[in-house]
Amino acid sequence: MDTRALTLFKAVVDHHGFARAAEATYLTQSAVSQAIRRLEIELGAPLLTRSRPPATTPAGARLYLHAADLLARDTVARREIDEIRKGGSGVLTLGASQALSREVLPRLVRAFARRRPLAALHFETHPSRELIRLVADGRFELGLGPFQKSMPGFLRLPLGRQRVILYVGRGSPAHRDLRREGEPSLHRIPLVTSHLDAPGTRPGGGRLRDHFRTVWEVHSLDLRLEIVRAGLAVGYLPESSVRAAGHKRDFVAVNWLDFGVIEREFGFFRMEKRGISELAAEWLEAAKQTGKRP
Image (tube, rainbow, N blue to C red; front, side, top):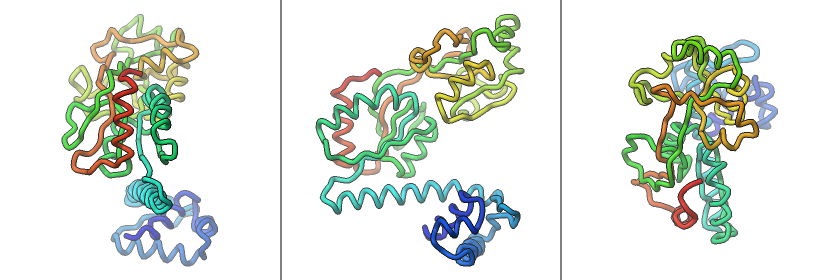
């Protein structure tokens, strides 16, 4: 698969149709349609329905995720090479969890900018478990997030510990039911989280989702805070983020449950098999000297 075909496929999905995708890519609609057809023949599976607007098939939905990732990595690679061509030292690419990006990165950026004022930086936020895959795939050179129990192939620089607590909105029906009935009431309440871990990886030993009515995966930390505060769901939130929220008293910690508190070490990580860039090495040195805790 070439990047041009993937770009056109992604454009059709993003722009909800062939005509708008053709306009966005400065091609004819026929050229876009032919490119998608060749891609379907190459892969041996239909990627889009022929409805209006077209929708992704199961194969198309999976390809879209890979296409978005591959094209993003292509963009990063081109940006880094262009920076080197212009006489720079490349681009430092880093992915971070939302909470830690707020608590750790600002002071590190200040320290690093004093060392390398002309360095180019590219930062993104992603759910913690997603970061590990993105660093392994090469989209980011460094990741900042909580460490998993097993991270084979990664080198880690610990910075501190993070407490993630199950919270409920004060005064909400969910709060009242928890006080009256305890843990069984959770079966009537959704859980909002950035990314649900695999079964058995949380305290309590079982499938975490089995304790709740359903699971809402919401990547935005601000939105998760508001959902929990409004009493629409319970949610695992970083204790430091709740402390920093403007309405701290609106959150009640459900820390008396066996699975109500998760404490984990966090820090930077990178792939051991890949050489480290000059910028990444200097960034990690700045992290060591700036201090460990948010």
